[in-house]
Image 1: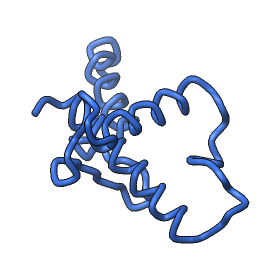
Image 2: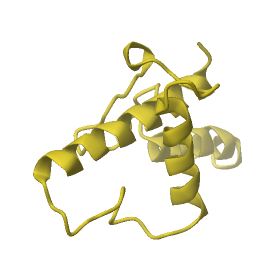
Image 3: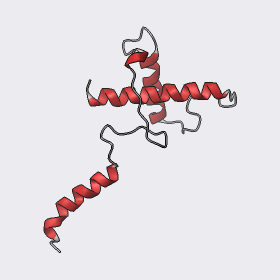
Image 4: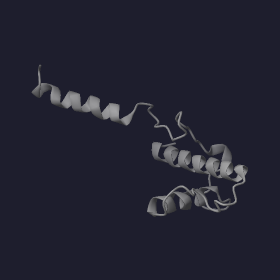
Length: 103
């Protein structure tokens, strides 16, 4: 399975899980998926993706046992290579700039 498919499946799993938690809480005032998100293209794309991949009979349907979701300690999705992106960027910049600053 390629990396992009894993990321999409993780997103679908996370949103499905979030939806389950929203339902379990029983807060009827929410009335929609991802109520704390601003309406926009990103929210629509994610909800459309989840709908396509979780609707049985859809050409993009992913069986529940094939769905993958991983979370960081704060509940956000974790990168496949668990290294903070800011740290990876900083290390790359140090390598790139070191020859210009031998001190």
